[in-house]
Amino acid sequence: MLTYSLGRTGSLTLYEELYRCIRQDILDGTISPGDRLPSKRSLAKNLSISTITVEHAYGMLLDEGYIYSIPKKGYFAADLTLTTCRRKSCKTAPDCRQTAEHLSGSDSDSGSDASETKNCFADFTAGRTNPDRFPLSTWVRLMREIIHDRKKELMISSPPGGIRELREAICEYLYQFRGIRALPEQVIVGAGTEYLYSLLIQLLGRDRIYALETPGYPKIPRIYARNDAVCRYIPMDSRGISVSALRECDADILHLSPSHHFPTGIVTPVQRRYELLSWASESEERYIIEDDYDSEFRLSGRPIPSMQSIDPTGKVIYINTFTKSLASTIRISYMILPPSLMRRFRSELGFYSCTVSNFEQYTLSRFLKEGYFEKHINRMRKYYRNQRDVILRCIRRNPRSYGMRITGEDAGLHFLLHVPSFCSDSRLVIRARRMGIHISALSEYEFRPEQQNSDAGFFSAGVPLHALVLSYSGVPPEILPQAVDRLIRAVSDSRFLRRRDSPEKLL
Image (cartoon, rainbow, N blue to C red; front, side, top):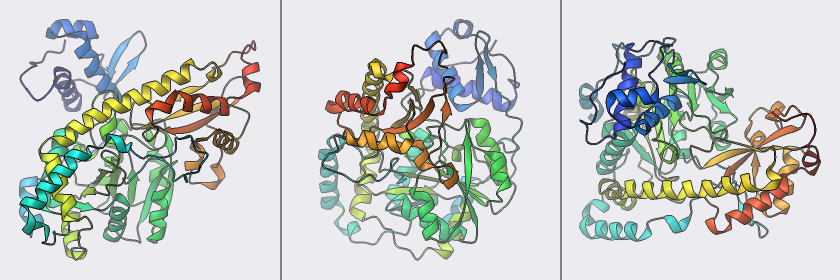
């Protein structure tokens, strides 16, 4: 029976403490691969805690791939022995204290850029945030205080990586909420992730081969192409990017979003993450760009730990943005460079000026340090969870939604709606647009032309199952029920509905 002393760390909840204890035992080998974990009820009784606490801890371990479940048998420790890259055994892990003296010397809007039209009633393709939810009064007050108190500093050009106060605030935030240990000297602040991608291509080299996920965010390959970089597109499976396909393509750099892939919503489990880290550690020239574009908005449990936080060899370049968490028009992003790359950046690209104004940098720094950002994220999680629940409830209660399936609804601000229909993906999109609803299909994000407009799967009745990507962050809550009704009416197939009473049952 597992026995731990819980309740000593005031900053963590009981289930987080339990999760960390079990995770460490799995990583250390105290719990061997395949070992059966105690039932929730028996472990709760042994530790004198509630079964809900154990359930939350097991849920986090399950989401991250440390354990797996077998129906009616229980929970079992996953096999992580395939990986060679472990923090406890790696002798080359960089030490922050040792590298400090050497160092001192997205917007990944998940959604396509659909144009606004007069006939648009609801846009499920835009990743914009609701402007009414932005804490404008707080932001304006902080900016006024900055203008009054920091007049001299506002007129001084900031370092290439951004003002130190903001970089310190980012490091503190990442340590508290993402488990990332980084020095302010490793942080580069820039106006949008697109700009940071371009910097990385210059830093890593245009002669490298860059591996990208497919399907994926459409702007990324365009940015690489405009910077004359060679790309290889790696297919996804149910656990994330395919490691075997990655090895076959001879790539040097891997660009991925493991905490919440766009557009599939896949969360890469820890075993696959270690396999990718192992791939990167096999060559000095290999690196992983971890795009953590909307990690704050995991709506079930705490955010998944980043790959950077489990990287012992300095192979992960962490990149994130405030565009998703604050507002789509706040173009402030940042990246964390490994120590070796940071030294190269200062040597080769240190002449670049920071592209974010001092006014915004000092304001954001105060916003982070004084706890306003954390409060804002907590409010937005609740708001988006309500948004999602309303949409899901409306879909499931609609009589025309028979046979439709929903996946990826627990993380990020979009999910997939799988629709049985004899129409093509493009036809479904057109039909929805005629109803004033803008949507996109999963096949639109596939980078290989031969797989465009492919179907995600089939029902046993032979009806094609199409995957639609629904981003709901920019849809006003008051129109959600009507918007969902229009959507379902547009994409539901009457021929399929007539067959739903067929003797052949659907899977």
